[in-house]
Image (cartoon, rainbow, N blue to C red; front, side, top):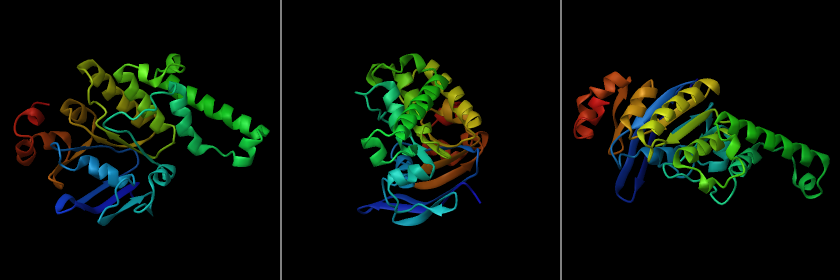
Length: 257
């Protein structure tokens, strides 16, 4: 059984078919890409997978469980986490607290223990803080833990968002255009980071990305959407030479990547 099985997802907005018949199967450890022109339906797929939108048709099975109709936090608790195209950090909080908030999903301390500050409350607080600091160290953000998230450079904000997503201990990580707004050096560093996360955390990753060098460089298989419909699915070398893909992107960007 696939870790994530997506079957014939479809959603309409009014009379517009935003996504139609989208299917994908992800095994444990996969690193897959989802690409397509602006408005192709990529983020809409992510929103259906994570409970932001409820599809009009289709099924999504996460580790064998149908997650259609569940709320985003319930899907996160089952093992699927995401980042966003536009960074959504708690910018008024510290770097450490951004990760601690995500780790609260795993807390085993109840309301009574928290209100009356029983010993378990303090042990859980220490566990969460220690784990948050460990993640920040892994992402080379440990020395910035007390800084406001808003004060970080753009590339570090991206790393923090990924670290926060990993704090929920996901089985599947959805990355929505992580290279958006990055300069060439930051994009190269991101490629190494994604590959490292995939191996270090034994994590299944589905990546939306417009930066062709990044997606072609890290993904082992790529699926292409155009007007909400899959037009190609295959290895990077196959995708960059596919006439339908080249036509969808109006030229040379994919071929030259």
